[in-house]
Amino acid sequence: MTAVIKRVQLTCFVDDYSEIVKISKFKLTSLLEDNNNSTQYVDHLDFKLTHPAISIEGQLDDIYISNLNYYTLKYFQKINLLNNTMELFNLTFHNISLVGAYNLTGNIGGLFDIFGTGHFRLNMLNFSISGQSPLLPSINETHACILMNIHPHVEAMEGWFDDLMNDNELEELINQVIIEIAPTAIEVIWEERKDVLDPFLQKVVLII
Image (cartoon, rainbow, N blue to C red; front, side, top):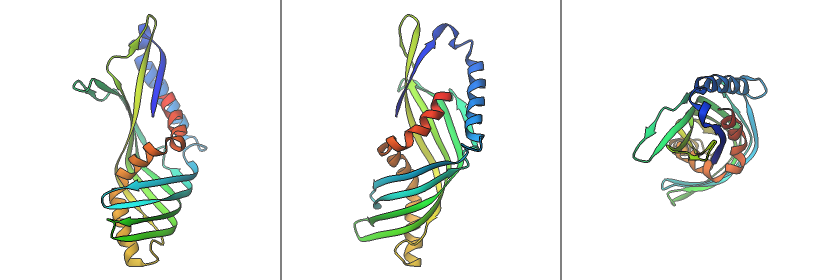
């Protein structure tokens, strides 16, 4: 996702920065801790993942995403002079919980097929969303326009997919593989399904 922050008054940006941080933290807290927003619902999500260890595709349905009020928000933490970029913000959700239904097919290493239909539960540990931009914004006489790229990252995953392969031993084995590659899968799926995932992200970014 590429977001554009427009109409930043150059003369007041530095002086008002501390106040901007206070306001945005208050708004973000209000958004995420409100009872109507601490849990988000996604009705359907298609996914497809190709990985050297496993290839899967399918659908997730009736997804409930909770624990959104357990987060850390930081501003201007990193500057990369080699790439001429800076991290405008980093929003880290420490333990997001997802539950829902799934239907998937695929194969492991091209050796044998996998399949399953049932329910799943996942915990995304330290799921961060960072906004990065060039060090120098596009400037005219009165305003600065900052192009911002959004980067998701998941430190680790925990969870389980029920009823994989209709076999208890295979279910445990395949779940271990899925959970191992899940952090990479989240980033890939995020890029592929921005149309579904971006609306909530845009709400968050606009108040940060």
